[in-house]
Image 1 (tube, helix red, strand yellow):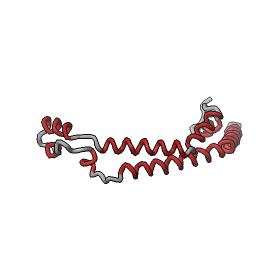
Image 2 (cartoon, rainbow, N blue to C red):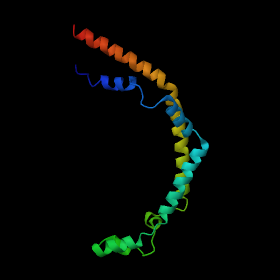
Image 3 (cartoon, rainbow, N blue to C red):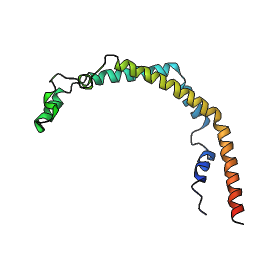
Image 4 (cartoon, helix red, strand yellow):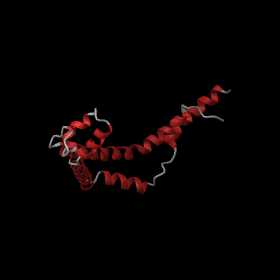
Length: 140
């Protein structure tokens, strides 16, 4: 018996999640941990700052040797990614702030999904049962 494509999302919602409740609780707790959120933001800030300071001059010289008509020929030998990208000195900090805000929102979203999961599963089961009754009625 083939299931209708309409029923597939209902089955996915009604199916048990592969993660245990303990794993889910640990994930939600981690996403809501201010210390972890700060570490994530600090890590990204550091990485972005480091990438912006990477030298691209030698790479540009290599590209210019292969393609002398490219714009790479005009990039100074000591140019960095930040120089080429038009770096604002606060870029790394701003991205870190965005990561902080995103991590907080991910924590809020995970908490909400965890709270609503039982209701959504019940709704999916009810909808699946209704769909089964409708399908059976059309086959009579």
